[in-house]
Image (tube, rainbow, N blue to C red):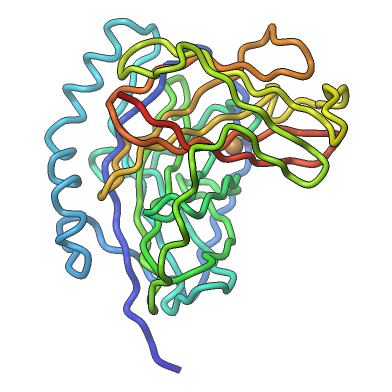
Length: 311
Ligand SMILES: [Cu+2]
C-alpha cells in the first residue's frame, strides 16, 4: 500500500454569525482520546503541499481576526474571539473509506478552547463540501474535551474538500472555521451542472422552492420558502423539528477557493405553517450559490439542494 502524505491545514476563523441567541448548555465530558496513528496536520505556516491554494486565504485571515471581532462585538452583546480549527487525519487517506477526523479548536495562541455552548442542539455542526459543491454532508462531531472534536466520515471521490466547523466558544458568538482536506487520486470529471431547478423530488417528498424578490440581489433581504408536498402534491403534515428548528439551511457560494465568507447558515423562521419552511437571509455577493435545505419528515432527515443565481 502506498502511503500518502496527508493533507491539511487550518485556517483562522472568522465568523458568520448573525445569531445573538445563546444557549448555555455545556459539556461535562472531559475525556481526551488521542487515536494512535493520527497524524497531526500542519499549520498554515508550515503547509507545503497545498500552499498555492491555501496560503493566500490563511495569511489574509491571520491579520484580520482582531479587527473583525471588534467590529462584530460593537453591535452584538456577545463577543467573538479569534479561534482556529486544526484538522488531523489518519496518515493514509483514500476516497470512500471511513476516516477518523479530529478537529481541535484553538485560540490565537494555540491553546485549546475547552468550553463550548450548545446551539441547535449540538456543540459543533460540521458542514463538509467538495470544492465544486457536488458533495455535501452535515455531521455532528463528538466533543472529547480539551478542544477536540472527533467524527468518522467518508469522502466519496478524490479531490479537494472544505470542512466548515460551526461552533460557539462558551459565552461567545457562533464561529465558523475552515479546514481543507485533499483526498488523493484521480478527480472524476464533473457531472453536468445542475440546472436552476426549483422543484426537487426526494423519494416520496417534493420540495418546491419559491423566493422573493424573484431576482436576488446581493446584500438585499430575500425570503425563501420551501413548500413540502407528498407524491400527490398535498402539503405534508408530518414535519418534525430538526435540530430544534423546522429546517436547516446551509448556503455556500461557488468559489475557486472557498473561504468562510462563502458560508451562510440561515435559521428557519418560527412562524411558518407546517408544510412550508421559510428562511430570511441575505446573499452577500453576486455569484452562484448552492443551498442545502434539510428537514425531518416523520423521522427521516432529507436534504434538498438548489442552485440560485445572485446578481
Ligand atoms: Cu448541525
